[in-house]
Length: 340
Ligand SMILES: Nc1ncnc2c1ncn2[C@@H]1O[C@H](COP(=O)(O)OP(=O)(O)OP(=O)(O)O)[C@@H](O)[C@H]1O
Image (cartoon, rainbow, N blue to C red; front, top):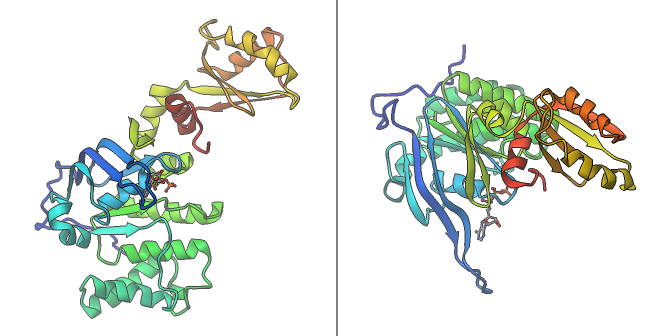
């Protein structure tokens, strides 16, 4: 059995109770460009903690400040304010020591296209100063783990997007990192390739690796994360497990209704539906969100809410009752969908 665990050693500075990463008031302000303009605050004073063995996520839309946060954690971009402690160390003082104990999967694959699959790992092993025999053994183990053993001697260029991503993940594990940082690990992959990556990340988690990741896919956050923060405009809007967030910020079910494209029925329905909020016991509508293409009615009993809608004389062209998701949490917290 392949053991990919990043087993703690006595040399570790962080105890099991101590967070592996602790950020307090963390900020990243980019200076004005040469062409002028104002300084830009990408990360606006955020607090969070990463605990050993968990999968912790940053969920937010493009531009929320997720990558900027990951780059500060990866010691490639210094914080411009607040406090950041990684594995008990200060990145301003000990960035090399920290980097040696991290694995980083950047948003864009940065594989060496000139080299073959195996060589991409070998070169990284040398970069981390590992012994030749150790690199060879680890490379074989990791290629098996990411299901690329049969491609070990192939060039990188013709690999599919999913394979390249898996190779990047293997490469990030060459130094047996205590924390694996993944910036949008499945962006750009097709659904099948995403599931293969998720499966590998699950296995890493099971073997005890601590993961910190960013995503704008709510299903990815729900599938992978033990705990997550919802991030928007450089700030943290909420924190908790996916289930806690849904319980705190949404109802059990959501009724989605759509109207004919000409919009006449919808305009008439608006006031009638608004009057349902807070009325009725079963199927009580907690709140309504109007999106350009549909109206969402939040209720613990979607079917009863639909009956109430019909009771107003409103006739949608389509309706759907579904369970609440993190997308609903985001919508509630920000008034926007994740893909706006
Ligand atoms: N070097 C930079 N100089 C100026 N502004 C920057 C720089 N890097 C990022 N930004 C800006 O900071 C904001 C946050 O960017 P960041 O990449 O952290 O967001 P994100 O949540 O990771 O989004 P994405 O999913 O698009 O990567 C964006 O508005 C971005 O344009």
